[in-house]
Image: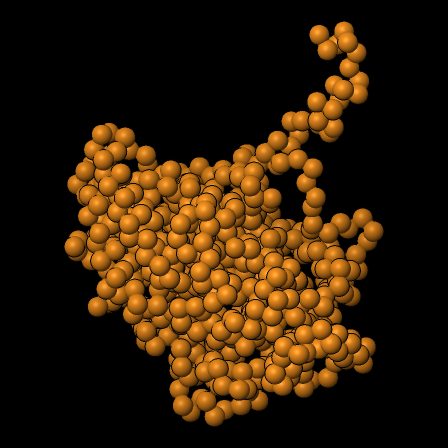
Length: 153
Length: 476
């Protein structure tokens, strides 16, 4: 890893939302076809109670203390709001899910960003199709503000 | 009913026959409809057949062509649309029980554009519920049950454009539209042995399409060949003021010219650090495919994807945006009506992300985007296996069910689809081999944003020198 690359933390072992489902399924494929060495619980694909074994495994591996505290705080907040809608099994799955989320955040938060590093979110002032053709403020407003009677003619 | 081999012809060949009035759009439509009725349920491929609309459009096409008004290569060609695309008057279920009765009184922009091009909609394709927007871990996370792979019905198509993959692979329609937020066109296209394309972000309108993650959702074609994908993209691409993220016409329009040859050799980067734990046969299939391309004049050299939390950033963007997109479903508790255990609860957890985390991810995203973009100074396209697995069984074998996931190794950390999806890059996957169990293997190409023509050119060059794309499963 070069110095430049070092600003990005090495990939951790967490499993993400979509990847979780893929790996469970792919792992089963691996058994039948020797197609992949990723191993996971086939029960998960079958929808058995231990459907979140991969997430369980994540939860089992230790998080930093601060991250554990964050998991607890987020979990308590979710349960305070929505706990009445969840079964005991779902609450367990919720813990693993929140743990997975916090782990992923841990990979992105340490990356340094400068003040000038704008986010990939955009508020568009005009339809892209017309961008650059009609400067702000729109011509109708400019005319009202600046135009003299002679100019209006 | 037309013979099966006609139903598997690529668009160009069908359109030549239609234009010359050697093939009737009505007969073609009836044949696909008949086949869809006969085999659609075998694969759980459809949510709805739009038979009345299809026959009406087919008769109109036939009449117009007979009158000398030929609209172009999609005129009279039947297709299916993933059931997250609004079609006026028909159910648009988003593949999910809470929306089973949902209808819209307008068409999605891509449906309108295909209608204007004379294409014929024969049905709404099955899909993973909410296109996996709230997560899923089971193949049967769908209103219509698990979608079965036409190459072997004990196996899954992959998702979330599951029905679209099955429909094209089984010859139930000539092409289909899918959506891809993170791999949902590339994966089912690969596992179903068809050609699938994810266009650059912003090139194809999402108006009238269910949103998962506004900053990552794309609509694209799934078809017989890369050439077909180019023809379809040229119709569905283009600016749409009703889509907030639609690119201006100068960038979004796509003029497709299937010209053989090029002024200079195609520069292909073979990605050597992706899918490190995938079956070696997947990588060797790609190596063989690249040898074909080298013989055809391409220059191939090795390259590695840069390191970075692409996977995490992609997933976090989807989680956060999906929690907002489906906030009513989540906060009302109706997500409990979803099929999948993860989908039932994931939205609650995702509501906990903070605004500062979201902005951090979006700022890092720009940094990652620049990192991957720099690779394309050296290469026209990057090549990798279409997926990191060959096939996914619907039910695990018994001996597997007793095993615990103790031996799980480190995951496939370098996932091309996470990178290209996060950064809005175009990608195409095409079949490049079959394994000993007769499952298709795929090769994917991705390119710099808006260089959609290059991924098509690479895939087309490969298909000009091979015949994997002409193979299809024995459906009956």
